[in-house]
Structures are given as structure tokens and as C-alpha cells.
Length: 363
Image (cartoon, rainbow, N blue to C red; front, side, top):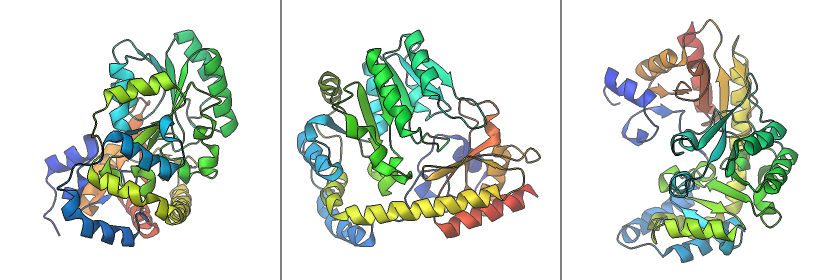
């Protein structure tokens, strides 16, 4: 085992922007993963191909998009492939200078990337943090934004916006000549899965742009792959013009080329993650005083019992004493954010280890 973590390392891991955890001997409950994908057979194939892959340029963007289209069953002319959704957010909010509405708490880059004076925050109300789409559409109209962001299931709350509500919001914003930027990076973990995706309604709603990370659902966050899907030809043209010719590497290309053959394994993995997540939800609810939102994604959002220390104190103790890394929500636009934890779902065995550690740390 690695030597004990220094106090400065503990503080850095808990408080900085996530990533780079592979360098540490820790159990990571921060980054949102799929513990059951990719399958071992693919990893073995990748191992054999790696020496050749790292010496070659990837295919140009247009060919990469066709691979993506084959994998996600969406026409290539409606897709843009990206080096993770984080590559697209600065294009929308920076290069294109969009004025946006964002429900908060949210994935921080949607707030931090917006240009000064071009961000309108729509505060979700505790304790359930549900999105009222009627109020949100009116808010978007009143604030004169170019587009409104929705993450469904939401990050960090893990709550899905009901399908009918999303269709209403897309229609209302279309009537107001405003875009709906909907991030569906976790939808496969929800009960309805992709059947509730607005990607099925692109022609009906050309004002909709679906943003999708592939790393979350396929357990390949290190490959940095995602996409945008829309029938909005002008917007897609502008996004493509902002991207380099080679923005996805050869390892990502290799993964995409194999993905259609791994569809069944992927479906099975999402079901296993969902089962483990539901057990984690039940176990966290069993803690006296812990308030837990029913999750739709591969993570759980909870409010600490009133008599417990703040989340940063608990996180520091777990990391120093157990080498378990969790994330509090003190960096979110959220009142008393340090009282809330977003806990990534790992395997059932790991999840039980975390719950027991939380109980012992709080005693």
C-alpha cells in the first residue's frame, strides 16, 4: 500500500476539480463510473492493439462521426463528436456567446464557462430540487436567454425530469425561439432509459440540442468522448467549425469501432449498475437522519443528518483514515452545500464498505 496521504494531498483531493485519481491508492466515490463495462474481452483486444494505436493518427472527424452514428443509431448529419461534453460547453457559452438559463445546483462548467452577464440562474427548491418546467419556461422568456440548460438525470441531484415535462419544455422554448440544451449523459441508468430521450424527437424540435457524455455510461471517462445531436443545421455547422479535425484519439476510435458489437453487454451493465445503486440508496436511507433523494443516475445525492459534521470534515476523515474519497457540494450554487454529498455508485461490495465507514466516522 502507498504511504499515508499528506494533509496537503488530502485537502487537494477533496477540494480541487476532480480527476487524476489513478495516481493514488484510494477508492473513488467522486467520479461517475460504470463498474461493469467495458467487458474484459474488449480490454484484452485493446491491450493487443495499443502499441499500434498510440503510434497512429486517428481518422478525421467526419469518419469518426460515422462510427459514432453506427453506435448510437442517430444519423451522422445530426451529430458532432467531441472530446467529452466539456469540450462543447465553452463553444456554446464562450465562442458563440450564448445567454443561458441554468437550473442550480448543476454541473459547475455550465455556470463557470458562461460569459459575464450572460448567465441566469434558476434556483431549484429544496428538499427535492425538482425542476418545474412551466416556471422554467417562463423564466427563460422573462430573462431573454438564447437557450436553457437541463441535465436529466440532473447532476448532482440524480433526479430525472419526467418525459412529458421535457416535451412540454421543448415545445414552449420552440415557441419562444429559444434553444433547449439538454444533457442526457446519465439517461441509460434511468428506468425508461433512452426511450425517454429527446434524441428521439430531433426533427420535431430543431431547437433541441442533446449533449451526451459516453464515458459515464460506458465506464470510459478516460477516453474523453461525447457528442451533440440536433437537427438544427446552422448550430451544428457552427459547432463543427469550432472543433479541430482530430479531436478524438485513436483509442477512442478503436472503442467506437467495437461498440456496436458490445450493445448487449452495455445493456446488462446498466441494469447491474441500477441494481447496485438502488441498494446503495436503501442503505443510505437506513442511516438515522440522512435524507436521500431517489436516484435515477449512477450516483446518489443526500443531505447529512443534522447532528453530523459538515461534509468536508467527513470527507477528510474518510480519506485520511480509510483512503475513501467522497465529494461534498460546498462548491455548488447551493445553500449549505457542505451538508450535501454526491456519492458515485461503485460495486455493491464497495458501496457497503462506504456506508459502514460513514456510520463509523459519524459516531
